[in-house]
Length: 64
Image: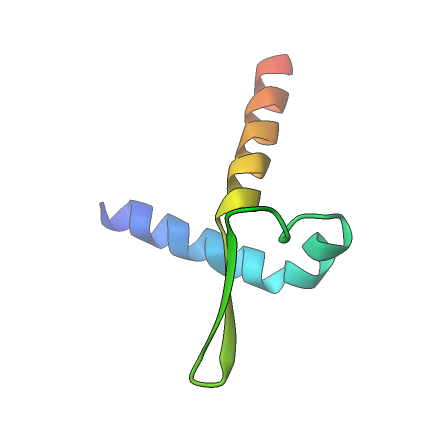
């Protein structure tokens, strides 16, 4: 279970780092992508974009 939590944390950190680039191609503004401010800092939780990217990766793995 700890491995899954670490993996989810790392994926969220990568998404947060690539946030501006992902918004330019349309990801990050999907339904299910949450943004909130806490203690003066903005947090971004891209659940909808993560699902979409996972489906794309799954489709590519099935084709290849």
